[in-house]
Image 1: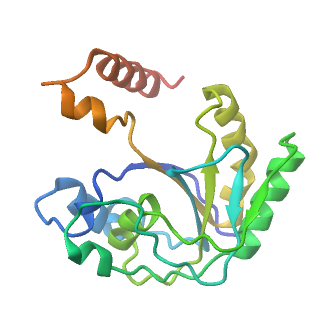
Image 2: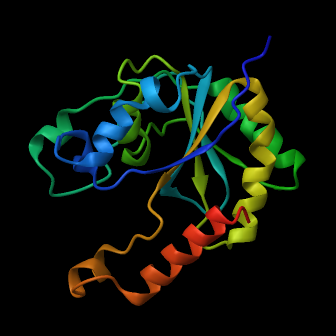
Image 3: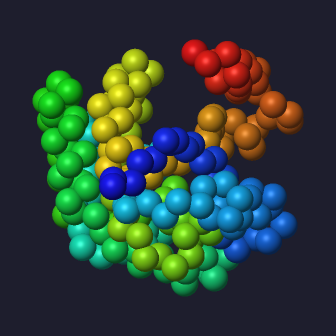
Amino acid sequence: MALTMKDTFYISHGAPTLAIDKSIPARHFLQSWKDKVFPQKPKAILVISGHWDTSFPAVNIVHRNDTIYDFYGFPDSMYKLKYPAPGAPELALRVKELLMASGFKRVDEDRERGLDHGAWVPLMLMYPEADIPVCQLSVQSKRDGSYHYNLGKALAPLKDEGVLIMGSGSATHNLRALRMVDGIVPWALEFDTWLKDALLQGR
């Protein structure tokens, strides 16, 4: 019988220091993932991270994922962490097949890229054994919400194939604005409120 994933998840992964800072509440939530949140063990994991942004959708097709340190100025210990999860080349090709069948005319293959911190930081806490194959799919930030909604819709069959689909990033993300303003910037609050209402109202 095929393993069915009834849910997809969006993880706000916060700062990269989530991997080492034991005082962050989200860390404890992610560490309890297998026991309290999602006890099923997926066949493979597809991560759509806000830290891989390309002009066209792209999947990474590798046999072993390297750990990408796509951040600067953090403690040295951060650059020693490794998450050597196996790649998921079959899943990557399946993602490409589904997207192209849904009208996405171009899907690129990256045969060198490993996992960025939007993938490996939360996964290191959720699945510390690093024994589940992982593939990443890029986002296209110059495209709108409808485009990404349709991209997600195209991936729906993967849930019936034992694949855990996980978005990773943050609802809003502008570090420059964070440094310049005291408190919450109005556009961030407005979007957060809209997002919360949209989720709670099921739209």
